[in-house]
Length: 482
Image 1 (cartoon, rainbow, N blue to C red):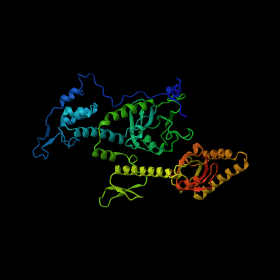
Image 2 (tube, rainbow, N blue to C red):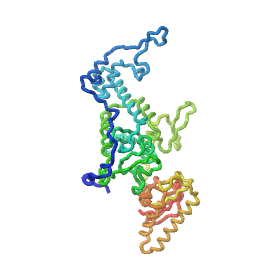
Image 3 (spheres, rainbow, N blue to C red):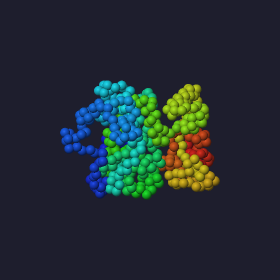
Image 4 (cartoon, helix red, strand yellow):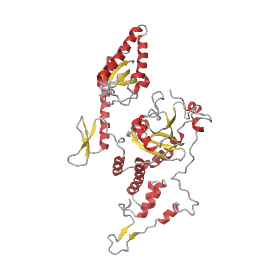
């Protein structure tokens, strides 16, 4: 159970001799992004001087060499100003206004340009920042450095669930306590270990001390799987410390906390997004941003696939396999997917009104034994599973026989003994991530599990154990508990 905020604050008092407080740190380094000027009078980069320097002149480059092909060239040539129809002075001032967080309406009024042009330039500046983040190759950390890592949601919240529901979009990154350098990478809705670990390997140097929260992609299986023994990070020699935010904000033993990265998300990202929320994206900007997103961030919903167009070489369209619907735009795919979900919800409501058992739920424990033909032949226990299906069935059958013997040996308390032994074996033998919970999958309704597993689970009575059940994941033994 999560503690209250006051209780977590009381538990967040690390002693002065905590591990992270006494470890030798690398000397502080100045950030390459810091620009210091002596006085505003001698600096060339003050607001007034930039405004005065961008006077309305039609400057052009001229070549004095005879016969030169480009005798006269605009100063815009070869830059991103080349296609703009605005005067160069107004373009430069728009960049200055955007950096100064000047609202769109005031910028439009001062420069006497249209709202569309102002919004397009503000979006252009923002897209440059987004693309820089998406293609970031910066490395931080190193021996003696402490790097805090965290992920934050950029999803716009809707009050009481009203209005348009936006797709979940997560930003994963880290900050170096010594240099204050940081990186942030968009991962879409995917925060799994196999997605975040390669990003860490790319952006955090070897032999770095990494601090995180106790999120399952960093710390899992009773705190035994950490970034130090992560199979995706072999050879990086990371030292990993973490703070469990359900208990405290600062670890009372090691002094680990993620306060700096949490503050960086607020100051450097979210406040800026709130300021820019009034700028509405045009269709072209949305398309540019969608094309620059990573493959993970624009992953297709289940049931859709990309198909190469024969009539338009090099183009793809999106096909819904079951219904046969086609569309050229990814945004239409998500719109149609929402429509399908609404239809399913309406159908479920009608079925409930007719007295159907569509809302029935069960809770079950299970032990999964995977084999080489499983959908994903790997687990937390073994990186690559090579056993055959016959061997997996024999192993699962042996486990079931052991459980039946336990029931026969404890006739007075057969249900309690069966569940205790089932949970114990699941923690040691199950190839499912639910092993850390004793194989508990929690309550689930129809349509949530694979058909064969669902059929077997719903057919059981409470306290009853199944025969061997085969699915795409492997061979299961199921015990219904509710």
